Amino acid sequence: MTVYQGFLYIKLFAIGSKSEQPGYFLQSYPERKTDYTLKAVRATFYGEDKRLHPLNGQKVRIEGTESAEGIEVKSIEKISIFS
Image (cartoon, rainbow, N blue to C red; front, side, top):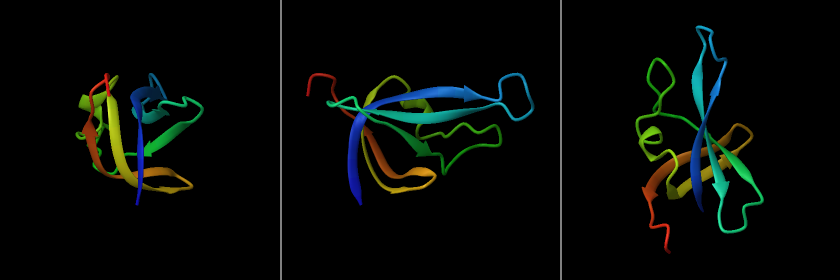
């Protein structure tokens, strides 16, 4: 299990189609060199992950495992922007 931290952001895919859904990404911090794809494992029918979606635009710490599809999030917590 690896710990990642950075800013979580959402990007919409297939806009205007029946397949429109959010994609979740983590901009690494403090180095800001890598944007990781987060694998939404608890997504609703429309693709919204109830753990990740409310943290959009927040600095977070994630524990997870990296695969070819992205980081599978085991736990996520909001952290202070001043830490």
